[in-house]
Image 1 (cartoon, rainbow, N blue to C red):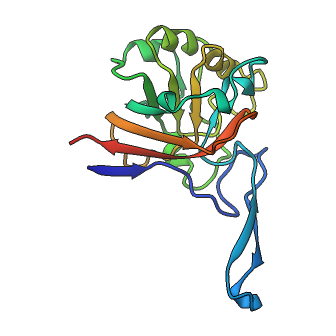
Image 2: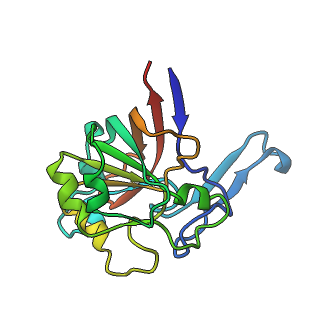
Length: 207
């Protein structure tokens, strides 16, 4: 059994979407202060680093984090190689054999995110949500902080997926991950009345 951690590391100065605040932390108590212990405090937005979007993020009345079951977030998943593409659209999806209800897309974003988040990302088009829903997909993972094109305020891809109750898992790190089937363990913080949550995400290779 091999476990692959595909979670971004949370630290000050981490690579992030330009509109998202940085990760902040401070020591409330520390050995250097003579406290005899360490106790820290940190702050972050719910969409920093690896996180999930619930439908409520862009669909008024949609499901919130507390409404999403572990059965949705954990189980069989398929990593699809979408490198050397500028968009993920219906034509591309039709060319793939979907074998799991949870799909993770590895694109050129993975390599580009090594240094910065400020580039023209690979993105989803508006026609993907309906196609994936018809094929029983309940979660889409992506190697960028946004399934829409950077700077696109319409959020058409977000709305397309979330309106079909497809949970969006953003900013997974798929470096070295091959296409194929895995067991996915996506565990967000147990928040209730919110639209998004940071999470630890693990892939398990089969025997």
